[in-house]
Each structure stands twice: as structure tokens, then as C-alpha cells.
Length: 386
Image (cartoon, rainbow, N blue to C red; front, side):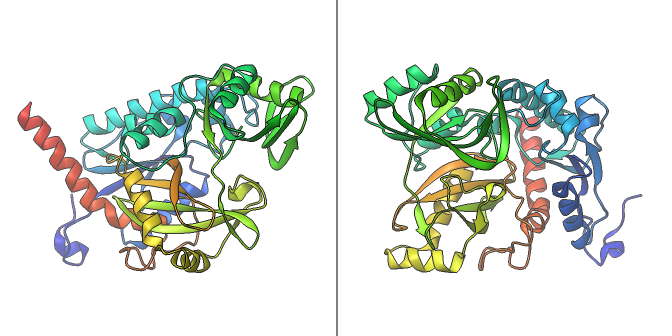
């Protein structure tokens, strides 16, 4: 029997909750904690391992949070087709299998009368950096200039960078995440190249993820690295020099929930990649705000850029947007839009965002009832109009 309003303190009952995730992962546990703190029963957890094997079902009225399948070796093996989860190669196969699974899950949720937290086709775009960049650019969102079309390997990349007059570029696996396989590349002339990356190259040419950022300084090494990455697809952007904070490169991760920027964190690093797991550190948002103000702008300028990027994915409740401030904190471009970019423990909402005192998961829980009503209205409208 469903609870009556009197059973819930006079409020109409909220949605029921389910999470597709890895049960042991802190993403799943942090979201479950936020659901309980908001006064709701704990969500059902459907393990990715079971979902990928077809063992799952949804119930009418459930809100289904679909979370990252990462950080589980067995899940990664099913998606990537290798027993070694530290390998960099295999992202194209991972992409095909993961996006197919998300389509199946979201379709099953809707058939059951449940509401998924994201749109499968939007996730497919976000996890293809080439398509994501194109969608943002078409919508007028500021993004770094990128090389068009596929990149065949080192020889092709070197020729095309030279033709475009680009000496510094970010070379990204089209379907990578967490900076896996990303190469910050400098080309100063014949034989003068430098690649900064977390990729470790084995003597046999295989590529492995590492937590240590390193440099490759010989052209044969860089050529072998790019040639090994190219078969999975590459996205190449002009390297936009970032603002600095305390002598470290800085950018912003902005979390946008239901279209509104709710959380922001400064990420700083001694390296071109600011990812926190690669030795990056949280910077000072207040200092960033002051630097932007001194340059004649406002932090709201960066937040609006993030919101404009999120608006390209209206069917997804929450995205994390990497906003790149230019040198001097004067302009902002979007480097990435992340479907699972909300893992920022202990970070509370921005003043005036409506998420004050809430972490990123609490903000999503608070936004879900309205999102659920909107999704159900859209579904009913679609049914009525045929």
C-alpha cells in the first residue's frame, strides 16, 4: 500500500528510487546516503554486473539513477573485453557496449513506467568527444578549435597540425574518461616534440593507465604513442592556455543539476591535466572569483557558460562541465561535458543556487520530484499526440 500524505508528514509521497551502479562504489553509497538524509527510503541498487547480464527489472514510478560503471574490474572486463582494467586501449569497444547497455536500461525503465536520470542518446554524445564538441559548437557554446574528421595516426596528425598552424594541442581518445590516454602535445619543429600524459608505454607497445604524469620527448616515442591510441578514435583540440592560481594551471568543474549550476570547484595542477586523481588539488574558489572580478568579469560568467553546455543535454538530470578559464581569467571555454561528473565529496552548493548546504547528490535528490513530473508529463503528452 502506498503511504498517504499523513504518513509522510503531510507531504505527497515522493518518488521511489533505484540506482544502477556498482554497489561497493562510493558514487552509489553517497547517492544512497543523500536519499536517506532527504527522508526517503533507501534506494534499490541494481548492480551493473547484473544489469549487463540482463538480470534487472524496474517498477512503475521509480526514479532510476544510472551511474558510472567504472572502478569495477569485472564490469570493465565485460565492457572492454580484456582482463586488465589498467589498459588504455579498447575504448571504442567499451563505448559500443556501454552505450548499448544504457539504451537498453533506459528503454526498459520507460516501458515499466519508471523515469531514468539520463537520456541514452545524450550519453552517447557526451562519451564521444568529437560529437560532443560539434554539438556544443553548433549551439554557440565556446569550445577550443578542433581538427575536423578522423585522425589516422602520428604522421597524419603532425601534417594536419602543421597545416593548421597549431604547435600545441590536446590529443584525446574519443571515448576516454578521467584523462585516460589524454596527451598534451607540443611540436616545436622537426624532431622537437614533447608529450605530457599519464599513459605508461610498455616495452611491447601496450599502453597502461598510470597515476603518474610523465613526459615523452623523442619523436619515435610520441609517434608510437599516438599510433597506438589512434585506432580507438582521437579528438584533437588546440591547447588553450589556462589561468593560473598559486603558480599552478587552473580550471573549474561546474556541476549543473536540472539546468542550474549548483556546485563549482577549482582544480589546480603542476601539469596540463588538472584531474584530481593525477595529483591535482582543489584550489580556492574565492580567489578565482576575485581574479575574475579583477579582470572585469564575474564568476556568473563561467557558470552561465557551464549552463549553456548543459542545455545541450536537456534529458540528463546532472552533468559536470569542465570550464577552462583563459590566461588572466578573462574568457571561458568548455573542455568537457561529463555524464558522471558529480563525484565531488563534501562540496556544498553555491550561494543562491538553491543547493546551499547540499552536496552534489543531495542537490539531485531535491531536484528529482520536479524532474519526474516533467518527464511523466512529456511521456503523457507523447502518448496523447501519438
